[in-house]
Every structure is written in structure tokens, then in C-alpha cells.
Image 1 (cartoon, rainbow, N blue to C red):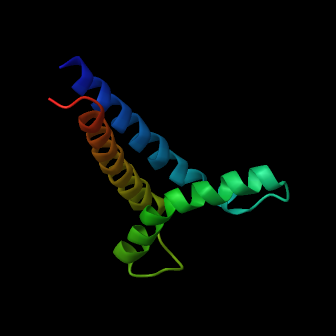
Image 2 (cartoon, rainbow, N blue to C red; image 1 turned 90 degrees about the vertical axis):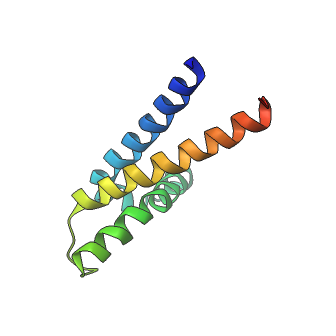
Length: 96
């Protein structure tokens, strides 16, 4: 039971982290000249892309959309992915 709470807590934290990073999409999308920082920014933008696409679909306009639906979509999407990956990893490591 304790392991399930930990798994759920990790998935919730990951979802909240990426959901909140959606609000910082403007500074993240301006790629730095520094190679390491630029690679981190590109990787972060790839993680934020599902919410941005979803928000544009909800708004019906790719040029004018709100970041609030994007943050919600990113939080839910990444929560689900993290939860599934943790569950698969746990079952593979310790079969019940």
C-alpha cells in the first residue's frame, strides 16, 4: 500500500511540474546559444508540446490560444504517462 502511494505521489508531482512549466513556455522557447542550455530547452519544449497542440485544438486557432488549457492538458498527460511507466517498471522488477 505504501508503494502505491509513493507511485501516485511521484506521478502527481511530475504532472504538476510539467503543467506549471507550461506557463514559462516563452522564455523556454527562446533557445540559448549555449549548447547545454539549448539542449535542455529543446528537450523541455518537446515535453510541453502535447499541451500546446491540445490547447490550440481547443481554441481552434494555432496563433491565439491560452496557456491555461495547455497546462491542464500537460499535467494530465504527463501524470498518466508517469503513472503507467512507474506501474510497468514496478511490475517488471517485482512480480506479484
